[in-house]
Amino acid sequence: MNNKATIFLDYKSLLFSIAYNMLGQVAAAEDIVQDTFVKWLETNDSAIHNTKAYLVKAVTNTCINYLQSARVRRESYIGIWLPEPLNDYETGSAQKRVESYHALSIGILVLLEKLTPQERAIFLLREIFAYDYAELAEIFEKTADNCRQILKRAKANLGKETRRFEVDLKVHEKILHHFLEAVSAGQVEELIQVLKEDIVLMGDGNGNTFMLNGQRITATQKPICGSANVSRLLINVWPKFHEHIPDFRQQIIMANGLPSILNFSGNTPIALVSIEPDGDRISNIYIQTNPDKLMQFRSETI
Image (tube, rainbow, N blue to C red; front, side):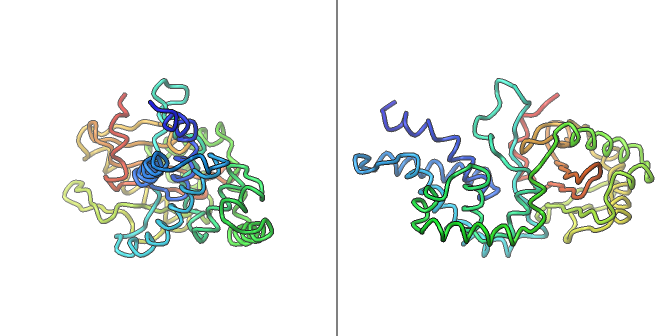
């Protein structure tokens, strides 16, 4: 391995983290990092004074361009588009992906969809990766004051929802187990107690369907709002998966840094359920059933 390749490896996990959190897509983030690596090998680095800043700038600008064109491509997407979950494997496992550090939760990635690509980039680099304004000015070729104003605008667009960045893992896992027990047992009252009144459920299936006892089930085309509607949907659909999906099983795994429920038919992942608590109740549920976004979870076995 030559020296330039070795230098790039020192920053590869950081670059992947930035790209993934910008795009919410694993393969696209990996492609951008790989393209940046190829360009880096072809670059005359003698004129580069700050390698890290150069590589971060290259990845960030490519991601901004990608997002600007992605908005057009997503118009043909069927139903709700959710970020692709990132498989963290088990915490402490030897096979844990180093690239997954600083992977934001599905809920946070959904929240960041409110921002323009540039606002998202500056928000991530400042608030998540702790870049100072002088570094941001160099990366975006703006003044520090301009970067500060863009960040202020991004925070204004997010509003009070920035509190969702604070997560207590133990509380999150406790609520997840409570939620799973209530749904699996069909305990409507128990389930409603763990859901906020204004809860929102979003499902991403891109038009894919399940056949359950002769009934075609597909992801909701629009968000489901309110604890009564969400609990009714879960109680009606969840048991059908248990009864009619061949070799159905569930596993709690780490995805995007948080415990999530992964559902299988045999060794094929069919649905990933992620929750977002607010206090001691669930404020959002995200269900990913698009098989293209679950392929990486095939290696998860009991």
